[in-house]
Every structure is written in structure tokens, then in C-alpha cells.
Length: 298
Image 1 (cartoon, rainbow, N blue to C red):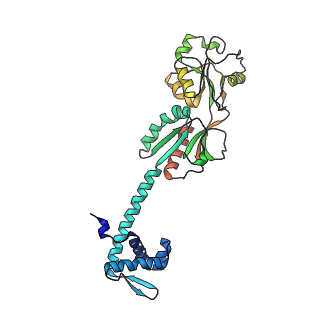
Image 2: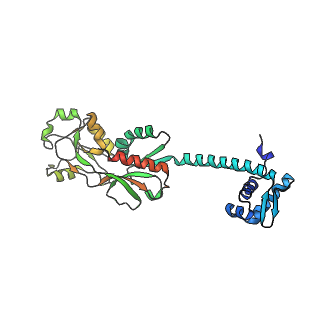
Image 3: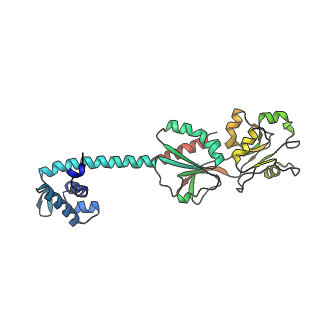
């Protein structure tokens, strides 16, 4: 059906519906953000096309004719349906929640937990951006981000945080092949995460905090991403520094074991930070609440 051949101007029909509802051209014009003369012209145009008056005009009053009321009821119902459809389209778009995290936090902590979130809220669409450079929350590129550090943050609000513990780890096979009890003395290969971000602890800091001597030992392997460091440790390539929050699943499944009993608390915390520039929505609040609970679980 070719609606354009049968329908008058949609602008005029919207003006007519407002005038019928308010029984006033002045109030209708105010609602639509146009002049009173503009609404009057649209109504006059419709009356010319229909070949009949649509209102009985009195002194500063208008009263819809019976034919006009029939048309008004259809317009009110149709425009309401269009408005509902627009809301659905808009809500579907806003249901996409974008989460930012470092590559390691995304791979080791966030992604394994998303299955539970999607099972509980299957209609929520999640977009994860993983990068080791710091997210600019002021740019609004993500709705929320996991950020290591100590709040407050100038570009977002931290709504949850979790501390962490640092200790050496290696694969069970590597531990069995060496006298792991003598660590760090002996012939052990150290695996280092060598990145500009100083929030990743290095072996020099572990030796300093534990009161042990490094004997000037250099790392046998250096990687630019923590995910690679842990992959090498799980593959039996040496001993790496483990962040408990990130590697807990590998300790639980036995692919990594703790080396020795020396550990220390990380100075910062893993935080859920809400972007100050991102538009808040019900679905964003839902995801933020779930992430808060998940982060604070033992």
C-alpha cells in the first residue's frame, strides 16, 4: 500500500492531534515548539484537503467536529504506537554496555565470568575493549572500566574495589623438576613482565620486599603482556609473579602452584570505575551492580 498517496502531511497530522488533545491551538503550538500561526496553517491545510471544517471555532476556543474526533482517536493510537517503537529501538541500542579492561584482567578475570552474567541477563549485550593503555573515561569510549590504582579518579567514580596479593608461581612440572623449597636460591629461571606501566610489579621489587637477595640474576624471559608471562609459567618455562585475583582459576585447576610462602599486598586495588561522561541507563546500572558483586566475592 502506498501510504503517501492517501495520507496528508504527517507534520499537519501531528499538529492536529495536539490541537484536538488540548482543545487549543495556542497550547498545541507551545507543546510542538512552533508558532500558533504555524499550527493554524497546518489545520487549515487539512481542512482544505478534506473539504470540510475540523473544528467549531468560538471565542478563544475550538471544539473538534465528530469527524475530527474519529480522526483524532486514530492519530492518538498510531502516534503512541510509533513512539513505543522508537523507544524499543533506542533501548535496544542502549542495551549495549561497553566494558574496558587490561588484556590480562579481561582474559583471566572478566571473560570467564561473563557466561554467568549472560545466563542471568541474556538480553544484555556486552562489548569488551581490552587494552593495556589507560582508558580515557572522559571521552566516553566505555561505560565502565576496570582500573588498577588508588581512587579517587578524576574522570570517573570508583564503585567497587578489590585488593590483591603478589607471590611467585610456576607449573607443577617445573616445581617437581627442581627443589622448589630452596627458591629463590638455585637454578631457577625468572619470567618478567617488562612494560612501561609501573603498576606491574617486577622481580626487583619482590626481592626488595621479601628481604631476599637477587644475586644480580636477570630474567630469562621477558614479555610485553602479563598474559604471555603467565602462559610461559604454565608451560613450565620458569617462575613468574602471580597476581592472585588474576590467576586464581589456574591455582584452582592446578596448572599453577605457589612457590614458597613469601607474598605481599599490592599497593593499589582493582576498581570498577563508572565513566563520568557515559550516559547512565538502567542496563548499565544492572551490569555495574553485577560486576561489583563479582569483584567482591572471595
